[in-house]
Image (cartoon, rainbow, N blue to C red; front, side, top):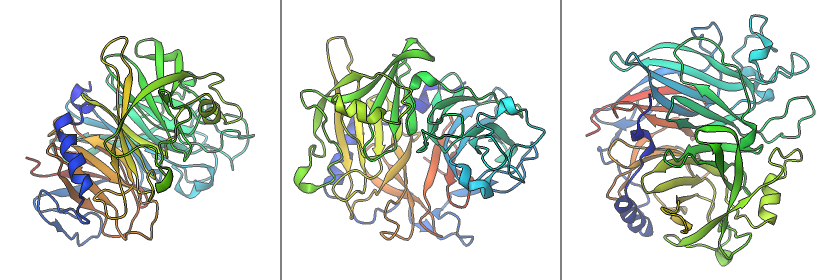
Length: 448
């Protein structure tokens, strides 16, 4: 259902060029497709020849009668059997965001079976409203076919990851793991890329641990799942399942740097930077215990045992040359880092971790967050400005196989973050979310 194209990002040669470019970045990278054309509607500036369509807007009515929830975030694109495309889209909503709920009034509607809501809460004022929606898209017409709730009752579903068997792992970026209301949060859930309207039963994948999850990426050959943690003192995890492609049981581990216990990869201050751009370190893995973390201390336990610290691990994608991991506010200026993790290719060898990008104020890429492969072997990176006073606009940055960084799109209205970037399997459509206004867009044009 979902082919290997979506698991390939870029070649080693591409990132050799990328490192060279980042050593001498231009302060304002131009678009490889030409200058951006101002959008009179002030939604999305694109190069000449490209166009967008609004597929979804927060507050509109969906096919199931519910409202489109707000704060669309991570998203995956899947081929459907009839030639359609299914987008599975996260909504990063907590209890306080009831004004962005899919429901017209507080609490769970009476026409929803409570067993299909992970955490309905003890009363109508505390129903969890995070979850996912599915959008069915017809690439032949460029039109939306249907849209509906697919998961409800979770908390702050931020990013996730596509699975090659046709499902999306959605992750709770919950910072309220010790909630006293009843159900625990901070889990991952699996959502099928279904075209059938209706909610799916929410089952937490507890073996993947309980922490402030951000995104996941699967190594399809080994079956190992890699997981990021969106905290400024977060870890990088991997899960080795007992049975391939079955995440119900297995071993959860945290990355450590060989012979450098409790290594700090964040480089928050110039005089204590631990790793330089382009430097490669030998990586090992530490087994974790008490992974359900009732005290929300899994990262503390892991770090105390020797695990390395990452600065807000966000997007992660598998490629034929390793896993690319965005750390949104790493580096001395806190303008972001991108690491590459290269798993060992044979028994007896060790994994390696390389710092590919360390952005600064004048770099061509600031605060990278969600990312995805391009059809031509490059990378699209969403910006999520940590310091909103730095710039008035956020951008989609495009990295070519020769290492050139371009500006592909710009949010002309404000600096709300881009999220959920993903291509259709044929490479003809790019899907993207604008988090603040709650828009999901489909972009097409002369990619070649």
